[in-house]
Structure formats: structure tokens, C-alpha cells
Image 1 (cartoon, helix red, strand yellow):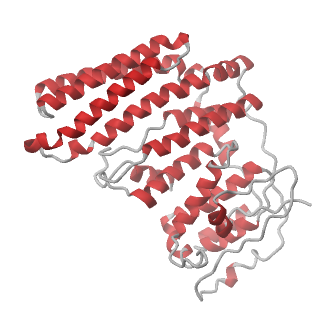
Image 2 (cartoon, rainbow, N blue to C red):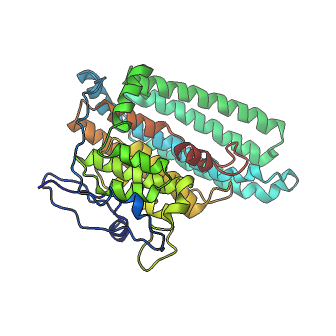
Image 3 (cartoon, one colour):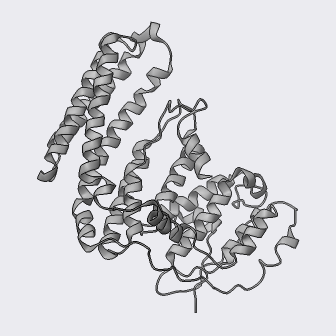
Length: 393
């Protein structure tokens, strides 16, 4: 018997904190209802929802670009080193991001009141410098390590000038220019040594062919779901999504992601909040329900072609729900990046077993290169998660 998988799985998902992914031994999923909490009765839009649906998902076409055997071998050899160096970079960004509040206070007259934050940053950077110096790095990347250490030394000196002379001083501005120049040198060397261009020679046409193969996959009843959304019936669309059979774990993730995305969309959240509730918690936010779907997928410890995009949606939704979008909000980039690097390690393992999966390698570098959530990122309304949320939803 073919498995019937339910992408939306609101009650069970929150109760157990994980998705039930399809397996080779397919059995019918536990029945999970979407809780309706108002008297509004959109039965006219649910006619198709009640029908027994049959799977009709087309097979994914052959990839338009496959990496050579030597390229895959090169990637697998360098994968750990890439993660190590990006861990160093993100750690430094975390420290500087937390000290950025000092520059948002616009309080140069009382600079001495803020010097403790700079002193703490200097100490953290010195500790990071020791950590990088002692880290086990492949000998072929020793020059890259030394370049990063030189940048770190410049950064420490820069912050010492800031501490001693203040943010408006000539000494600090001169040191800051030198530090930025050294970081540019390191970044260029990083790109030339272990950047994506060293592994994938891909033009925009091939890239978007790979992208479309993943994100434009057709699924059964897609036209009906699109029609419901055009008619402003997002709840009916989600119910229908929950009835569609998933052919494989990737299709399962796709349907889950679409359901969760609808719950984040400002055009739909008001409507959905009337229907999607958790028993015994009538105030449970529909956005949180969608967030738990993202979290379940990235915590499933299995590869998905949607990992990068879902990780970004998980991160920005977590920031929005639990920490806030202000420049002065707590931003737990360490938590976000811990998950980022675990997913990158998972992708390496996946490529070992599936060397022809070019999109997996692309996802790996997407995860490596996307920046942390920044304070004071040029958005007058808050931190950079606001821009990311607008981009994704």
C-alpha cells in the first residue's frame, strides 16, 4: 500500500518536534486534523479536499549539469577545511556584531561608558586568534591560515585604537581602513583557494536549470491549490496540500515547505489564524506552527534539496518570533551557525553517497557564504533579518 503523507501535521509536529519522513517500508501516516476554531464554514471551497486523491507526481528529469569524478573527489577532500575556515569567519562576525550596539548609541561624548564592550571584543578576538593558531589545519592551507591570522591581528589592533582613542579619532579611522584592506586580501585568498569557483564551473543557464529542477517541481493537484490561493482561500489550500501523496522524501519536504510558507505570508496569516490552532492553546500563533515545520525538516538529520532555503526561513522566522527584529534585539547567531555547519557536514556525507548530485554541492556553498544576521545593516527599521524575511516571504 502506498504511503499517504501529510505535510501539515500541525498537532503531532508540535507534540513530538519532528517530521515523519517517508521510508522504504511505507505505511499510512497517523491521521492528524487541522483544528478549526471559528464558525466560519468555507465548505464551498473544500469540495475537492474531501475527494480521495491519487498520486500523480512526475519523476524528476535528469540533471542538466553533473560534476566530474575528479571535481567531486576534490570537494570531498576540501569539505572539512572549508567548514573550518568559515567557522573562524563567522565567529569573528559574531563578536563584532555584538559590539555593533556601541556604534548605534551615537553617544561619543560619553564614550568611556561604552569601553567595556570594546574591551570584551578585544579579549574574544585574542582568544579566537589563539584558537585559529592551534587548530589542526591541512598543511596545504597554512598560507590561508596565516592570512586570516594577519587579518585578526589587524582587527585586534583596530579595536585597541578604538578603545584608546575613541570612534571619532584619526588613529581609529586609519587603523580601521587598514583592517578592512587586510580582510579584503584574506577574502580574495579564501575565494581562490576553497571558493565555489574552485569546484563548480557553472554559468547562469546551468545554475537556473539546476534550481528550477528543484524548486519548480510539479506536484499533484498543484493547479487546484494555485486556484484556491488566487481565490484567497489559503486554509483550503493547506488542507489540500495535506492530502497530496508524496512520492519521496524530497517531495514530502517540498509540500511541507509550501505549507509552512503560506503560514508566514502576511497576505494569509490573518485568514489562517482563524482555523489553525493547537488544542488547549487557542492563542498559538500560526507563524509558530509554520516555524515548527521548518525546524522539523532541518532537524531530521537527512539530506534535502531544500536545506539551504529552509534553513534561512527557519533562521529568520526564529529571529522574528523569539528574539525580535530591532537592532538592539538578542541575535543568537551562534545557534543559527551551529545548525548551518551541521547541515554542511550532512551535505558532505550525502555527496559521498550521491556523487552526481550537483545541487547538493551548490547548497553547501550557499550555506557557507550567506552572512549572519547583522545589526545596523543599513535597514532603518531593524536588523538584517527584516530584509531577509521580506526576501523569503
